[in-house]
Length: 207
Image (cartoon, rainbow, N blue to C red; front, side):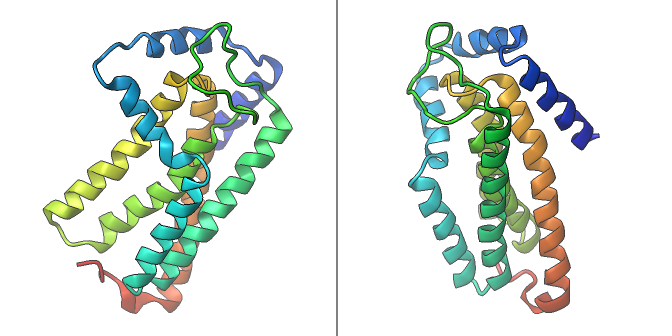
């Protein structure tokens, strides 16, 4: 169902770059006026911008490698790179403009196309993969619980942050979650295939 849903949504935003529901959702999200909410949204989105996205990806890979998780480190790099290439390809194909400042609040002007959200796909491919590793390779502890909550929170909130900051429409975010989940599934399948064949001795080293 996910590929069909993504294909249908992609066709819809291709023929109708501005959907009424997108504007309604953007106005609703941007009407949130809780103390510190704007700052939180900016903090949530910050890791997804270059150069910090590149630095964070390398740091994650180096951290995994330092725990002797060589295949995990390699997979994190390959998966994030693959996700980025797919995202840029889709942006060029669809060429959907970003939300204009005339009808929504735009915190900063970005020059690239809008669909699908690169932040959401980056977070799914990197932080989603790390979330999976923490779940499966760490023993139960408060650190494990904290990391699962932290990375899970990033995955959930990044979509809201992209709409709140005026960088994306809600359908950009939805499309990215759909496509990103497909890519993450492919990354996990690739990781599992190789892991079980060559790296079974590394199971549960994060203790």
